[in-house]
Image (cartoon, rainbow, N blue to C red; front, side, top):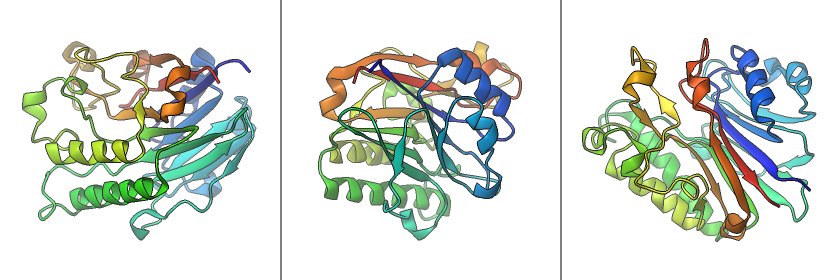
Length: 268
């Protein structure tokens, strides 16, 4: 089969940004799209409009106003309905499928809690939830053993490397780049022996961002970004990585998300 094109994007409201999703599909031609922050209850998910974009296979886990994940595919899949309900919250932060490709492919789409503004478990329940979520997914991953024929994508809300943020020194005490968060994300990756598929193509010290704050008056001129969106693959797929693309131009679109689409091509 031709290269499999996987795309991940925190769309920040799938209904609001349907026209932008159509543009992403037109420009990048993904086979599978993993969305986060769909902000849409399941009964209102725009299945017909997305089917019209060329994705006959879809699964969505959503709720009103926040969170939500979805996988849109040109290829058949089986949903992984038995995967855990993280922290017993039912807050739609993960959906997994088994893609029908030669050899099979397990695909997970995650939206990790952002964690609020104060990086202190005792002072900030949102930060405590983030750390608890990471601990739980790490334990689950460790129990399953090294990932095989698998890809994990999503807005993981942590920029782990010094070169994943515009200023390592200035962001050390800012949620998304604190040492405790970085250690937690690294433990998760190590538990599954995941390979960082995007840094495979863009090794440090090159800067790499996927998110630019809405608070910046001129996000492009300031370029104070962070790499919060990730694609990991199992070690047995590391040799099949063909190409990546960070669609930075999307950040400048009208009504843009603060995250941009990230594409990976696999030569399966």
